[in-house]
Length: 290
Image (cartoon, rainbow, N blue to C red; front, side):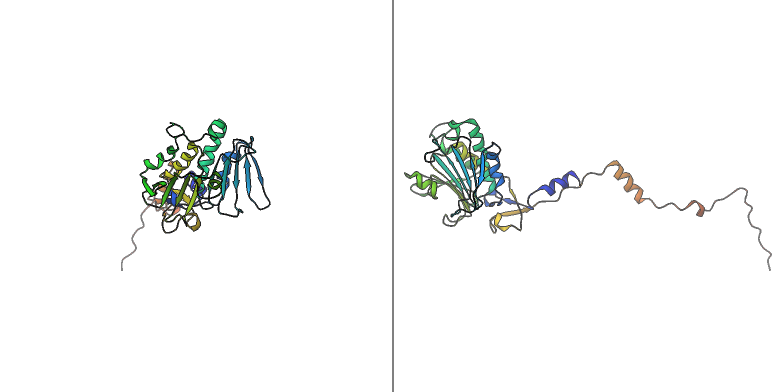
């Protein structure tokens, strides 16, 4: 197998989905878990098959909950006191593209290595590194437009009108933010908030750098890889699908060229069948004429 063919065979999908906010989950949790698991976080499972990751200091916890009572597949919380209530919480539902979850957990792994001042950094308006609207910049750069769907909500919407990031200005109850979709930040795709294609939420004190990692992943123009037959992995009827083209053949080697040239030459006759003229041969005399 040529190197190009090997790379093609390794791809986990046969179509590219564009725009990427119209992809859905790959239904494989490992990519989202790996950035934190690679830090040596404790991993355990319950009897239902849910997975839990806990940071060594107990201040960050992730739940991967395919058997939860609601559709909150990914729940990530951080704590100032491991025994106290969460300082912030993020949720991705069961349909959210896995790549967006992985972008968040990758940024969280970096923030955790940098210490509590990073993974517990409250957003601060006007701060060059902590302003909450740093999360909006990647979307604006890709042509998303501001909207005001209600007096207490600012929104920014994708050019196709099918993805939205909303920020509420209301006073919010922290417990409600953590347990429902009524959170400070609401990222979703679809035509109705009641029945979104997928959604993610983040509470008020979620660090701006972590939010920005997600919006950068959403704004990335590169399509996402999926299998055409797995229609649950993209929004059928809305997403654009582009088939993966087979790899270009390898250029011929000098040996290939010689073999091809040899195959085009006419075959030589056996030596014994080739008539030869000899100077010692005498021509046959003509017979008598009648």
